[in-house]
Length: 452
View 1 (spheres, rainbow, N blue to C red):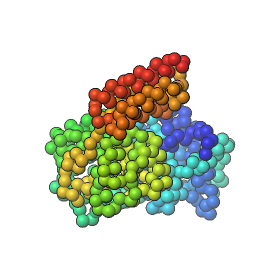
View 2: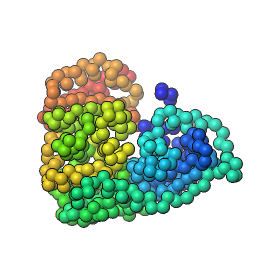
View 3: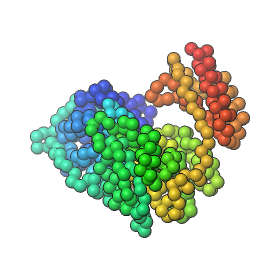
View 4: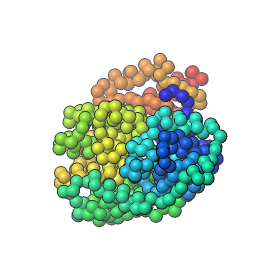
């Protein structure tokens, strides 16, 4: 589909609350349009689930979506605060027509967003999102009084998801004897994550688990791992894990306070599955995944492919290849043999299973991956500049790649959210990487100025 989208981005509809498209009028219309499109072909009332994270604006957006869906003749089941992957799971197991997530993930509290899951617990196909956008151009009409949708609470949604998460951890193993810090990012998993790990036997130190509507992701969670590092060291814990605001990302910290990011997590899970014969196919990373991960996979004889940055693209490539394991450096890890979408809790459980199964510490497993030095410089643009169309930039890239040979790589890409070109170089030699990154960044800047 090449049609231009007015509302949907790569991960639903997102923005600052009170500004388009996250305004009362637009969100009400979005709920109605989604109800009209997703409810088609139903002999009885279609059912759509709504869950949210802990942002104060969630109350407003939940009510608007509920009203729009009801006006379209769709029944609603309200989940309350729940992790994004939980909503995907519950949508599928409840046989609902779709699931709606109200969250802006790792963003600050004043942002929010709305994304949808299909009845299979996967992201909506592009043609369905476009159909919803087209429906939003139509006048909002209300179903007759007898056809309006009803809303009710989904009882024990949290308990069902907790049991599902625990089921992804091997029955023969236990977390007994482990002291684990769980940073909930004051987000959607605050009442879920600590129970999952404690019920599997761990001694849990729960932090950032008191959301007030405004403190989600604030100096905590996967985007602020220094808080987890300090807490692990203060409590002399065996390890720690930090989720993001909607629970689909995880970053871990070992007992020494060393950060275990998404590249490490993928390596640990892939290594464990390769040894046990459970790895189906290869591993999907992104353009930003460290070259050390790619080389480590090659050493194991595991195919490795890079998708564009974004979990949607990782998931698409996994499906295209028929593989099951992929993710991003940010800690968004997808294990398709366990869940239909990225899940921070489940990813952490796969790492813990590798620890318990091997008898090794997280530090031991982490040290198996050599992370190559990586430097990135954001070159700010005053006007649009396509590096692919600049012979000077392309020549400079070839020269850098030639110097790095097989021991490094170069990535230049325009940001999708701000007027900058990201220049990234990585390789085995930190000084060389730093020098080459600055050279490329200077080349991009001067070439852009000449083209202005």
